[in-house]
Length: 526
Image 1 (cartoon, one colour):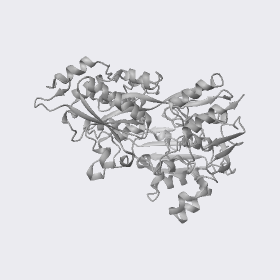
Image 2 (cartoon, one colour; image 1 turned 90 degrees about the vertical axis):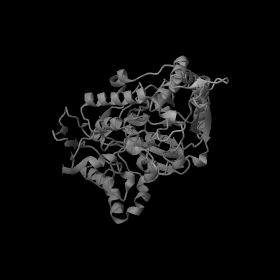
Image 3 (spheres, rainbow, N blue to C red; image 1 turned 30 degrees about the vertical axis):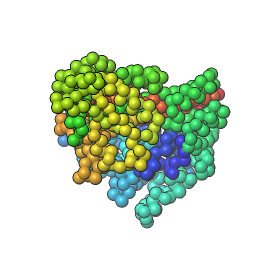
């Protein structure tokens, strides 16, 4: 969906424009990590012989909380230019990641590392000073972009001589050298990238010899190319669901649409100085979520192809079976909604709207951004549901010039509706320390500014608990807290279509965190 400035999602995500949709899949075509995620979001070995686990002895947890993970590089690992991939590359990657002058490559995981050593060219030992649940995802391809391996032989000189120009090196784009299943043959600006199969790829030579990845900025043009047969596969969030259905119906038997539950659409209540103050009352929030027919919204807006978002963890995520019984579900029930508001001391006037004991009309502001058609298609139905039970609503479409106004966005008086990531690393954004406040110049990532010591403790414990059963119990408690107290009102999970021509074989579905390029070496054509 456009031309990425580099083939590094880590660098792209730090830019003002954010990640070009599909750039993560493009990077996975040319890059490889020690491990990678498959479409079921399971870590599998890639450049490494095995993923460290407690069971295989490569992940050791000591009684005092310190840890050690051991990596063994496959003996046939090579960069695209034929240079052997060794632990020297990994040590260099850690140096770059820990350098405070290059914050682009930093990751919170580095804060938990005590030391990194390499006994030989294929063995790396990471000593951790405290528990870190994503230790096995270090050096992983693309996501979570925690120390994706860098070529020391190509970048060390630039790193040592002038860090201010480090990100300007041709290695990041036209002259990219990686370790993935495909290598860059040609990069034509504003047009496409031509890729050739990497004969030396560690998991086996790709079955397809050449790929052409086109840069198409406009989604309507993308749809037209698909229907004309000049594009056979989409990467990332390149089409709306409406466009995907249009292409699917045009293709009939010549292709299919694969769907991924991507992010969730939510309404965030304001928890700091809300107006009206009743927004902070859990009973009021329970009344409002019971007033929304979320199933009807999913059926009409997303054609019945999505699910109501009762939980932070979506039902197709691998963790969901472990936490499902702790999720509090709020059924559509307008009668219960009005009863809950009645019990708060509000009464309805002649116009059917609620008023407080002083006669003040109960009205809330509901904001959303105007950059996505979906937002505008949702904000008015939600407002209508609330109005039907007697709550006045003032819908506000945030003008594009104010979308980056942190103070304005943080001080939403009542509610804001957004699409948000709901992967497990993003749980950290719900912590009190992420609340955007005047004293931190409104830079926190928490959208509702919810602050609760009990909830913070659950998040803190989750990120340091290695045992899966214990960690899933904490995740269940986190989801119970969110859903019971309605600190976030989930509406439905967004669905992202991937269009696949029938000529293509073995295309993996996008996972919650994995791309369809996770098995690119297995792609084939009829």
